[in-house]
Length: 146
Image (cartoon, rainbow, N blue to C red; front, side):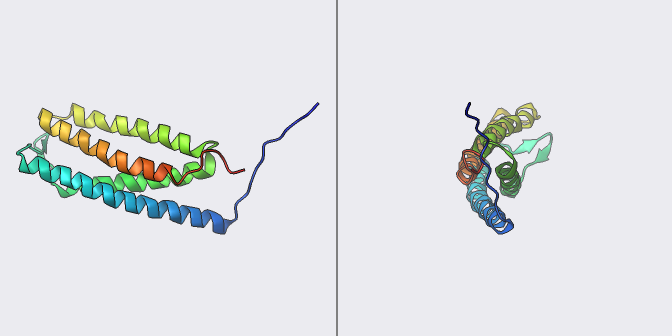
């Protein structure tokens, strides 16, 4: 009878730190690119008279960048942790982030806002996710080290 055991590979703290820094760098760069893109969406919405008002609160254009950067930071942390803990880090990251992106639409769609405002906010989430998710997923291995 032939038996197999799972292969395991250990990484040194230095290797792990290098991977973490690389993922963090990717999150910062992707976040910055996505922040510019979502800010442009906000600027276009404002220029075309989309009322960026949710429940009587005015959404300022810089908020598009701020929330995008927060999302990129959370994505970077998630990617780092899944790389260390998941059997299939890339797949786990993609499933998780796509589900979280879809969930991020709920408050926008349920908000007391015009349809144009809701579409602008959902569109900004889609653009941010389209930039950040593939960039971070590309840093992750398809399967556990080994």
